[in-house]
Length: 55
Image (cartoon, rainbow, N blue to C red; front, side):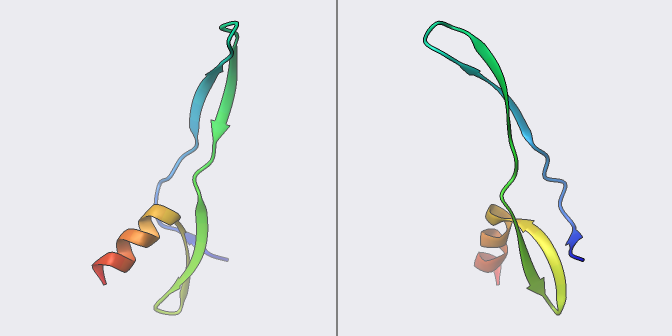
């Protein structure tokens, strides 16, 4: 099982139609599984790109 080391949470938004009706919506973070030093880790795609750039 992969470890979740970051505290990425879903983003809750309200979608608005042309008639100005509001609908609740949820956007989940883009979590990917990576191996770092032999340990499976769940990271967001943005955090993985940042770690790759730093290395």
